[in-house]
Image (tube, rainbow, N blue to C red; front, side):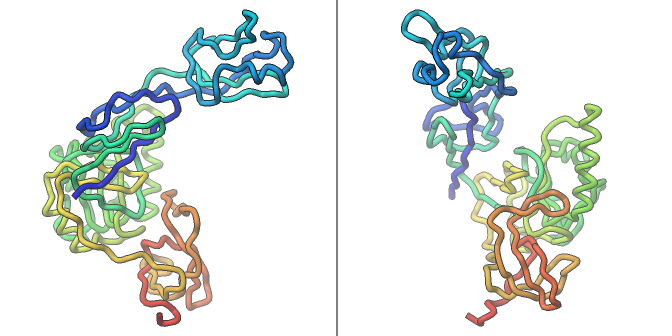
Length: 344
């Protein structure tokens, strides 16, 4: 099987691959020079025109990348305005006759973090066909990483403990069970683990871990990328038994994990087992997470935008009217649909 992966490109990125090219996770697909803060550049006064007249003398459009000395505007009589340095042209102010430009920083690489074949190259994105399976999670944290899958627990509901993280875990994507403590997550990052896959994680543990990482970054103690993806829900939630067995059968396979996007690609893998569908508006639901664990109610509305959990992880969520009279916003992954209220 194959799935498509899209690598978004910032404005002005320079692509380095062509259609049909086979790429590896660590391969540079494009380069970019990120813009800094915008600054004003006099245009109308240099061309000796009014602000309104000068707009028709611009040589570039918003979003154009200019190298130092390239023309930004000219009047046809020998007067011109040149870019003072490499910059991104953001726009023109017709009221005061100035251009807004942003200086470009040092060149940075853009990686796809996946293995596959390039199928499309455009100004906005590069699309790659990945031979393998995609597992979508319900939330995550961190950047894009890749490494071999390694099982860290024996049962889908087992907690991933710090003792399971050893030197052999360096560079691997570890598959845990129901949760991992802040201590375990901190040890995993310190040992060079690339990423962790869990059924769920407690809000407090994730908050404590993130706070530790912030403090370490402030003193320069955090190096390398690290990502976490939650598959089943938020809190102490085990992996689905069938999906856990699927991960076991693919141990040792190369995988790419996208923390913030909550996505995992496993290369040359069989399709993952089907999972339960999320609840829909009107369904009677049961909550699986405190403080509403075990309570029934009705899913009244699905929020248009992802909602942040107390740990700061965003997830598709809905408004639930519980049978005890309370209402709350709950991640859809923490709700089990029983049946529509009307019985349909």
